[in-house]
Length: 291
Image 1 (cartoon, rainbow, N blue to C red):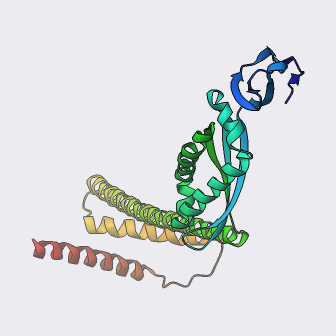
Image 2 (cartoon, rainbow, N blue to C red):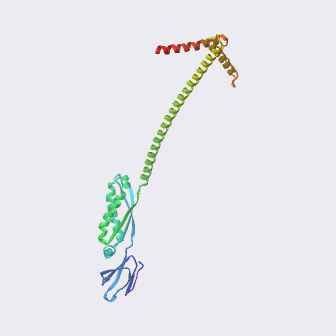
Image 3 (cartoon, rainbow, N blue to C red):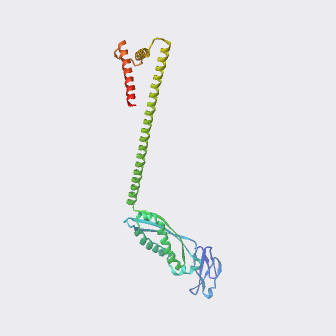
């Protein structure tokens, strides 16, 4: 262990403790440094114990409560207590095997009470139980357990594949829900937009018709004042004849020339005017009846 010893002297490295015997019996512990030994009185350096922290990885295979075989990798960090180095030197021949045996015992007693999901969630509890047991047992032999880490939990390959498939299915289900909600919001907003567009279109048509009505009324009043002896009916007939000819002109000047057959003659214009007037009069009569 990097220490030199002869019949009369010996050197003990830092972070180490020497065990001094006299005639084969333990006498004392020697701190790091240079020491003289009286060989003629039976004094000698029996051995050296390192007080550095050691790490031991233990792999345990066991079964969970839901009958899943798993392998647990447990890392134990331990050291020799300097004041009790003589116990560690004389009591245990192989401390690693002793620690490993207690880890196996605790883990195989605790893990079968847990389901696989609980084991992943409570692996710290398993490490804590192993630490408490080892501290109680190994402390009597001069060892201190510094840390215990549950490094890995490895289920069977088929179990891991099944768990990944379950996780993927749950994520796909959640994605479908979000996609459905997004489509629902899109359809609602689209319907609201169409309703708003139709409402605004109706408002525009109403304003257009109101503007046409106002323009016709102003034209009739202006014509009646300037031309004496004309009635509003005659002015309306003249305006309708003018609009009729404008419509015929627009049909002829259209870029997409098509043949349109319509009844044509001055009498038909009068008929159209009579139909419009009759419709307006019926609408006014219906409003008066409702009032």
